[in-house]
Image (cartoon, rainbow, N blue to C red; front, side, top):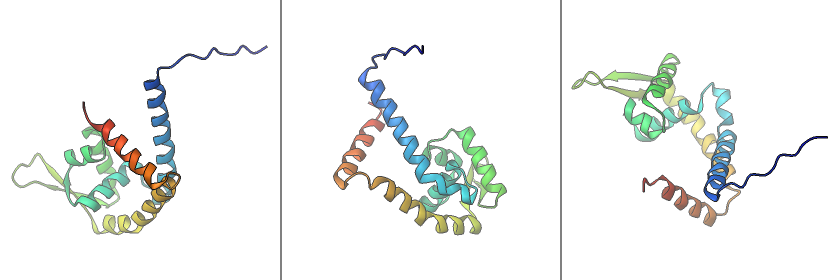
Length: 147
């Protein structure tokens, strides 16, 4: 006979956080599945997207923009650079800093895949009404605030 586990009462905050995390991971996986065909990771796409939208950026700023550590962003940029999708330009005033810039190849790639990416997001979010999306956006903004 198989012994059944006893259900443990979980605080509402813990249950909510768990569901939020699972949902974000599920939707993210769905939205980003097309990246494999372009041999890109989610982080690599995030860098290309940020540079496409915001222009050249310092590595530190890119890390903040895509919510990665500075150590991780170095590896991501190294791999993008190996594939000739970005290049680092040393800052003339302070040689410790590198500006990350899209190459012609990187610019072509992001312009090619960004519309399909946007479409994937719209399809995933279509499960919610416009009002629900607006409410969720406000809730997310509230959760991001430090206090």
